Amino acid sequence: MSNCGCHDELDPEGQYKVLVTLLLINGFMFLFEFIFALIADSTGLLADSLDMLADAMVYAIAIYAIGRSTLIKANSAMLSGIFQMLLGFGVLFEVIRRFIFGSEPMSLFMIIISLIALTANVICLVLLSEHRDGEVHMRASWIFSKNDVIANLGVITAGILVAYFDSALPDLIIGAIIVSVVLYGSYQIFREAFNARADITN
Image (cartoon, rainbow, N blue to C red; front, side, top):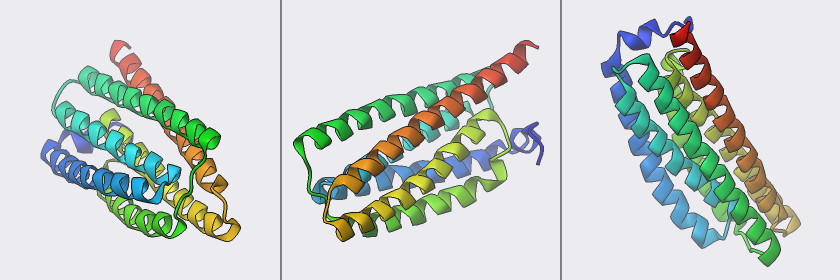
C-alpha cells in the first residue's frame, strides 16, 4: 500500500470500527494492568499500564479525526505525541523514585500479566495492519501498538530476570527502556505530523 492514504480516506467507517475496538481493548487493559502493577510492585507493569492509558487517549483522538481535514488529522497526531511525551516523563520520575527508595517486584505476576497484555497488543497490531501506511493519525496508532508489543516482551524478559537474580534491578531497567520507547514514539509522531502539515502548505 502506498503512503497516499487513499484506502483510509475511502473507508472512514472501517477506521472507526478498528479504532473503537482498539480504544476498548486498551481502556480495559489499562485498568487490568494498573491494578496488578500495584499488587506486583512492578515498575515495568506500571509503565506498560500507563502506556495503555495513553494509547486509549490516542485512539479517542484518532476517532475524532476520522473524516476531518488533513490539518486536523495532523494536529490530532501531534496531540497524541504530547500524550506520549507526558507519559514518558511521568514514568521516568517513577523509575527514579523506585530506584532511590526501592521496590520488590513479583516476577510471576510480571510474566503472566505481560503475556496477557502481549496478546491484546498483537490483536491491536493485526487490526491496524491494513492502515499502517495510511493517513497520519492511523500511522500514529500503528506506531503506538508496535511499541506496546516491544514493551510487553521487555517486561516478560525482566520478570524472568527478576526471578533468576532475585533483584528488582531488571524491573527498573525495563521501566527505563519503556520510557525511551515512549519518548522515541512521541518523536516519531511529531515528525509524521510535521511532515503532514508541511505537505498541506506545499
